[in-house]
Image (cartoon, rainbow, N blue to C red; front, side, top):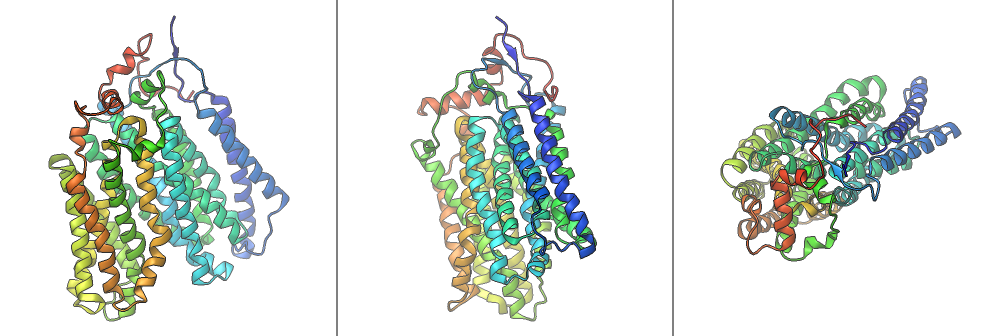
Length: 522
């Protein structure tokens, strides 16, 4: 009996119908936004009209319909794999480019918050405390999204999860037409849920599609450059569009980018290892992360991610205002953000080289130590120290944190077995982003105590020191993790073998794989 060839989208007519409905709902909101041009695009005095409510329903129906269409039907039987992702140099380069574009779009969403906040605050007449709910709600959404989508990647597939996140990206572009501040908060929470899941899923797919070692270095570089690119793209759009049509247009401007990402889906195949595992499904609970032999890995990854979250979302959030309040240094928030973006490029390039050529654990320890050193210098000199020393410390802090965030995702994807790789990546991302929920109020409380920024710098340096020591003492070696250990459990050994051996999927089917890894979108 010949097995059924796989289709990249199990129900293509349903999928594209859902995409069309979602686009129709978004375009209706875009039309309402265009009508507000006579009011300088101020929609705060408007109410949700029956047409807008109907458009919202259409968007929900479209997202649900398309989401249902991308999930493989239960009991469909064994499927023949197309050639595994990344089997040729050209296909690998194409996959890297498309997934990098996906991460770029993903990073633009949260980066946009920084540029819409001033205009939103003015339009809705909000206080500083009230506008702070916007990033808090959005980052809380990313925490939930990281957990949900990371788990979904291990249950329904990497490719399907990327498409589902893209569909939510598409639907939440209507943030730009929400008349009320409450409506914006709801849509930003949903946007955060979509954005929170893309990173761990992309890293899982990249790990299973690229050669060991070099693929990890590519992911480290990719993580840093797409973070920088997302911020620069958001800032560029803001500089050009906000003077023309206000802050709301930034959300609608991302609509064509999301549509391009969805159109590129035909060149995002499912990972061969995941498809092979589906032929003999084995439910692995999320709680496996906290059971031997994964316990130590999870604790180390959690400590490293949490330490970064406290430094980035907590300390660095207040650093521009602290420097400006000290006077005399002339260091603006814009300058610091520019330095941060600029430094992440060479920093991540060096991190990728060290990760591949030297040691994954060693590289993580080095960047943790760099971050700690910068924080201790800031604690020693305070905001009144000499300008060269202060700015050097700030530059080192940005370099260190850029390296830490570039390393944590690829490292997590490499050290866990395939069955829980997405879940683990989602957990690490959620822990890191949780710093956005409690980091700012915690640092604000510390800044009000004696010592101010000096005390805060020491307080966030301590968790980073603990994380660095944990990585050095108990961190896993990804190169060793790629080789099944004689002492490893059945789950680790078997699933690592599937990730490593691309011939397994072909042997697991009843016929020869279909040539070509791109296939049709159906």
